Amino acid sequence: MRVLLTSVASLALLAACNGEAPESMDDAAETAGEAINEAAETAGDMAEAAVEEVSDLAGAVEDEVEASMESPSLEQVLADPRREADRARDAYRNPGETLEFFGVEADDTVVEALPGGGWYGRILAPWLAAEGQYYGLNYPMSVFEQLFTNMTDEQRTRLEGWEASFPGVAEQWGGPAQGGYTFGSIPESAAGSADVVLYIRALHNMARFGMLDTVVNDAWTLLAPGGVVGVVQHRAPADETDERANGSRGYLREADVIAAFEARGFVLEASSDINANPNDPADHEMGVWALPPSFGGGEETREAMQAIGESDRMTLRFRKP
Image (tube, rainbow, N blue to C red; front, side, top):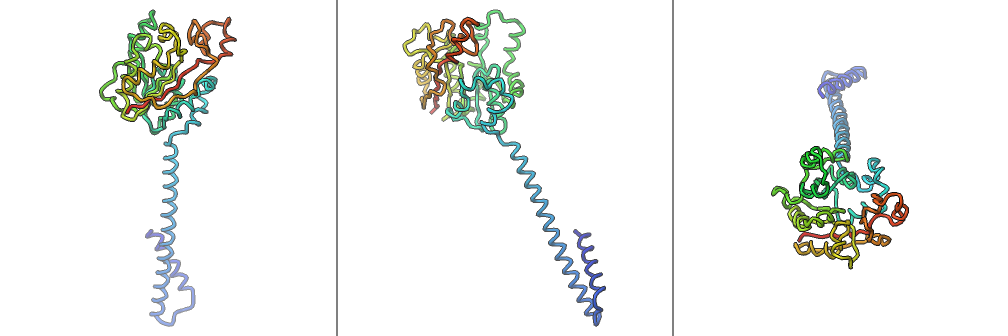
């Protein structure tokens, strides 16, 4: 600023000297003073303009940084190339409509049960990365042992270390996870921490092994008052027998699921047919695994199962008072 003022003043004085000669020394001093004042005003204007320019540039940079930290929209996440292989299932699983029905927001703390290979994880991890928090919830070892009777030592070690490894797995899905939990072992520090707990096709094996109450209690523990449990579950016919609707075939009766959550104190706030499939009779001897994407019956039944599509599913929203 000092250099700028001196330079402008010098030019002003030079201009004054090159003009008409003053009549006296007083006139010369007055002329020089006016030139200096004009130079100072000019320098001030230039400095003010420079400050404004720097301020505008800083504001633009700040806006750009904030924009880069904002959560992508749900539509952007669903359209992301990382979901290219997942998208074939969208017509059956309706992830956008389902998450909107459950009221999930980008700044929520969300616990997803049985994230598995990341079908929903590739939506939730990047969507919640900027403003929310994402946790996984998995089977206890006792359930894994009943599901995988020939478990190797390597598989056991990997499953036992699941809680610690889950954040790294979620990073590969497009965003960080803050941690992982195990059914029946929710730490006290997590009590009341979640806005949403998602049980998407996650109840049948726990019901099958007599642990449906554990599922319900864990959701109650994790959720803050007013929090939501979102349930999507293969649906057995209302008049199905207990044996065929115990979860071993993947299907549960909707009334049984509702009763389990209401008994704990949850309120059934709404149900939806978003994931309903009236073409599914839900009577397959192989259960839901006869249908796509498993096609458990092989090529012999593949065409017929493809015509049905994925299973008929209940979609329920419960709220913790």
